[in-house]
Image 1 (cartoon, helix red, strand yellow):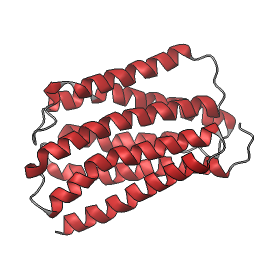
Image 2: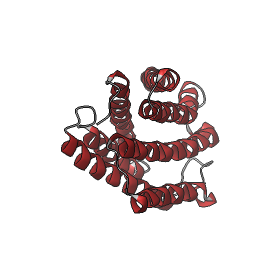
Image 3: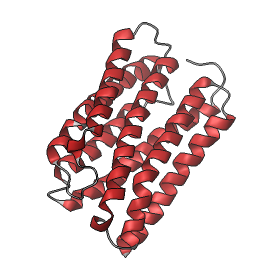
Image 4: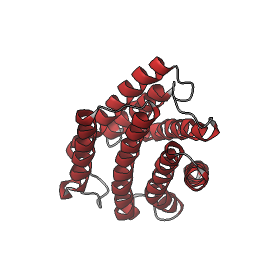
Length: 223
């Protein structure tokens, strides 16, 4: 019961913040960059709700294993929306720092995103079962992790060069999100307690959304 109460409160606060912030920026934002950040936040909140809502329901009722199919489907949807989240963040990077000639880099990001989603859709993932194969958990996260590493490098380089106060900590936030996420992928099936790292991982996403929200309070002129 304490787990159900704690997780439910945390999830309500997180989803409420992500969806409210994202939709507000989408509706009220006047700049394309602000709207992209809003879309990114709203998509993350909407996608995560497909996993977190069934999880809360499972904790309050018959348990996680009895609701394996709903949880697995939610994880599949979340995996796809998280991929698109980072693809949008890449386009925010391009627009924020006025990057023009990066066709190969853009193509690489799209290739990684499509590969990640394709791997997620393979039946070998066994999304609807409670104990899913570790091999495909690792495989589908390889292109996703490469996307994350590229985002870290790109923001670290350009934010420092532009002395960007808004996104100066973006590389750290993304690094933390992956730093907490990877151990869950690798070890949660062996040591379930590792799953608690999803809380700081989610807080890293909240930090990313918060940085994106600051764009709405900037002067119209971009860097």
